[in-house]
Length: 151
Image (cartoon, rainbow, N blue to C red; front, side, top):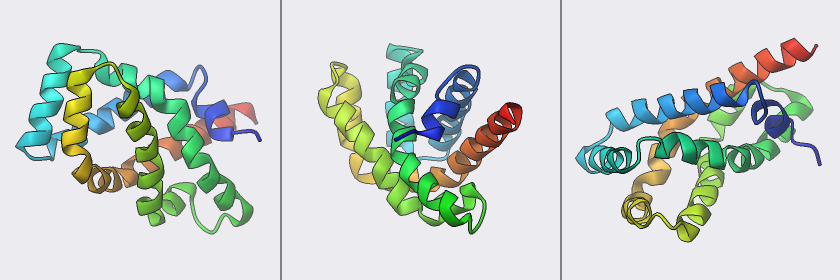
C-alpha cells in the first residue's frame, strides 16, 4: 500500500523543511514545559547538538507511516481539513506516534537519552497531544504545497 505522506513529506525537497519545522515545534513545546523536561532537553542538546534533528529525521518515515491510516480514513470523505481531522483524533494520533518512539527508545544505544525518555514517558502522551494541532497544520501545509507543485 502506498503512503502518500511518506512519499510526499518524507522525500526531497520537502523532507528537510518538515524535519526543520518539526524540530522548531519540539523546541517551542519544550519552552512551555516544566523544569524536568527543559532540563532533560537541554542535557541532550548539550551532549549532542544535532541529536534532535537527527532523531526527527530518523523517525520521520515511521511517524508518517503511523499517521497514514488517519489520512486514508480522512481521504474517503474529507469531512474537514486534514489538520482538523487529525486534531479531532489527537489522543489516537499521539498514541500512534509514541509507539514509534517507545520502540526506538527501547532499542537505542544512547543510554542518557533512553533514561531521560523513560523518566518522562508518563507525561509524554499529554505533551504529544498538546503538540498535535501545530504538527497537523505543519504536515497539511507541506502536503498541500507539495501536491500543488505536482498538479
